[in-house]
Structure formats: C-alpha cells, structure tokens
Image (tube, rainbow, N blue to C red; front, top):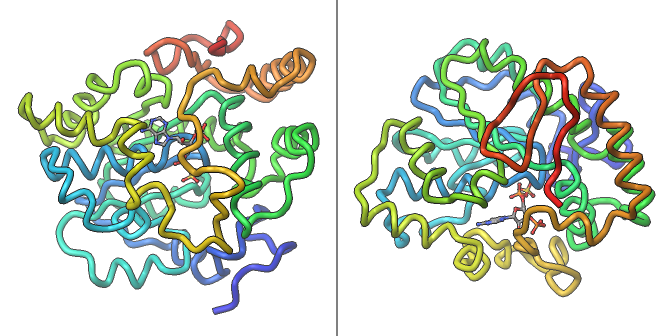
Length: 303
Ligand SMILES: Nc1ncnc2c1ncn2[C@@H]1O[C@H](COP(=O)(O)OS(=O)(=O)O)[C@@H](OP(=O)(O)O)[C@H]1O
C-alpha cells in the first residue's frame, strides 16, 4: 500500500505519509466498531498517550506490569494508521482504540455502535507549542519553519489532521449523537489526576480499589511515563523520531505556552479563537474543571 505523499490529502485534510495510506484512512471511515470498544479521540498533542495509559491501567486494575507489556501504538492503535487492521486481527477482549480523525469522517461508522468515546481536549496554545516541537523531532513530519510560520499554518487549519477549531467544535457539539461520550481536558487531568482516574473508571464501569487507584496514579504520572519505553517512543528508530532533537515526553505542563508565544501572537490568537469559535455552543474554559459553560464569554487560558 502506497503511503500518502507530502501533497496528498484525504477528504481535504493532510496526514503524515509515514503512517497513513488512502486505504488506511478509508478503513477508518468504514470502521466496524463493536459495542465493547473504547475509542480515545484527540486532536494531536492533547493528551492521547496519557489517556491510552490511563485506560490501560484502569482495565488492568492499576497493575504496571500489565500496562508495560506492549507499546501504546499496539495497545491502543490509531484506527486510521496503516498497521491497525493487522494489530486488531490479534486483539482479544474489549478493544482500546485511538483516533485523531475529525468527527465528520467517523460519524457514520461510530453511530452504528454503542462504543464508548473519550474525548480529550487541551488548551490550544499548549497544543500548538507541543505540536511545533513534535514537528522538529519527528522526522516523518515536514519542517514546521519558524514558530510564527507554524502558528499561522495552525490557525489556517492546514496542519496535519486539519483544523483544531473544527475538531473540538464538531466532536463536542455532536456528543449527544454518541451513546457513551466522556469529555475531559488535559488540564483537568493535570490538576487532579486521581479524580480524573476515578471519573474515567466510572465512565468505563470499571471501579478501582484505593490501592489500585494509587498504583495507577503513580504509573501514569509524567515522571513515570517519561521513563517508560512503552509510552515514551524511545523504541522508535532515531530516523523516525530523533530524541536528540527533543523528547516526546517533553514538558508535560499546563500554561507553558507563555514561554513561546509573544504578547502579540497571544493577542492575535485570542482574536482568531473568538471568531472561529463564535458559532460554537460551547466555550472551553481550560483553567477550571468545568468542561464547558455558556457561549458568552471569551476562553480563559492558563497563564
Ligand atoms: N502523564 C503525563 N502528564 C502530563 N503530560 C503528559 C503525560 N503524558 C504525555 N504528556 C504530554 O502530552 C503531550 C503529547 O500529546 P499526545 O500524546 O496527544 O501526542 S500525539 O498526538 O499522540 O503525538 C506532550 O506534551 P508536551 O510536553 O507539552 O509536548 C507530553 O509531554
């Protein structure tokens, strides 16, 4: 199967050619979800790997040995990536799946099942900074140029996987069309990991005992995951991800965008955010545990 070339798109969106083919993207849009599936949905750099680890640890009752048996990309494969169908042939029991695809590409397939969906969102300014650094260390992504250039491409929505604005708006505003939908933010997980683990375990109907919860919390902390080769991508060859240029588990912070954005870039982004999100029924408040409030006020970012 031919990998996508640099200029090739699928339904108007570009994807990293190293991981995608036209067939793999079609496979995802026609995916046969099972009612027992759990699907983690994220825009890139929003906490995908973290949630993959959290769900794995919840399903193995906090046992770190079990969660360290396989790398995250086979434990919770991205359904749009070319190797997914092979990985799933060997899958046993309820499946944990991941996707960065926008809602409109997955809706028909998803609505035919009662699969559980966990949507993780993150402050877009932190997403942009994380995404920018990822482009610099992942050799299979095109050169992002300067931060100013990348910021402008991100705002135009011509980055890999398309517009962040459309992704968040479409998934959250269509949540009611999905039977089992959990919305959670990176910031919420960061501020209170234990409560977030409890929230996800309740959603998965897989309650944890106190000691299991403590063990899971330790294993999915940033410091533990940074050293865990099953999630930190150090198993990936250097020609694909060059860890001498930057780490996949980079900073794991909230509000760190202030160290990269200039005051003017931040102000311009706020204006662009306000106009692009104006038609959303939701306002995303990143600094509180509330996932959404009324649509009147501007977003509040962590600073
Ligand atoms: N446990 C934990 N705690 C806090 N932060 C964490 C954790 N695990 C992953 N991360 C951070 O998540 C960022 C990577 O996001 P994704 O996993 O969504 O990336 S990807 O889309 O799968 O490439 C990336 O963020 P940045 O550090 O800001 O670059 C990771 O460091």
